[in-house]
Image (cartoon, rainbow, N blue to C red; front, side, top):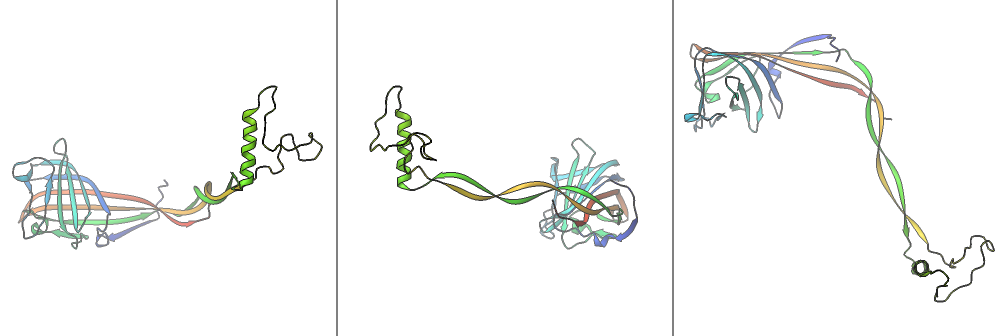
Length: 270
């Protein structure tokens, strides 16, 4: 991939709304200042749920002070948005899933309250989004196309006379013994080869009729097509704190980057 960059645009993360099955995957570091407890919450007030994959008494996980490599995945699950944290404080990593209402957007400046998360702390921070694009370029790419092809196979006619003639020939083939002449019902005289064009020894006046059985099939054909395209990279930087009143429990700094190829023109495949 070419690394030429011709544009760098700062975009408010308000446009980075999590919708559908889209996911944002951050890699970063979680600095825990004070012991943090993530608990399961099934209270009737908010109906939120935090899932911890480790077996803990009371359905909770405690993160002790320290610096941990942490992945955060943000996306949507059903009617809720979901934030999954994979904290490398043990082997296997501690996985914590927090859900909040799908109508809550994470913008350039955001705050998720304790009530929204179903926890005893707030999550507040910033998420800055930048988009870069490479210059447009053109190339030839492999492609496949389909075209119709008629395929015919020989099939016996349903004519009774033709079927009877075929049966008689098969009988001749199976009854011929060295030095004997097979007995055939109603034998007919045939001239020697060459007496009449198109006639051969043992040939009946009405030879079997075979009609082709034809159908159309679609066949794949490899080819090439001309395309024009550019690469677009979206980078998101997140800096967030987990706070309880005036006390900061932890801080997370991470980055998510996604690159995709965008075609601006696609020619015919041939």
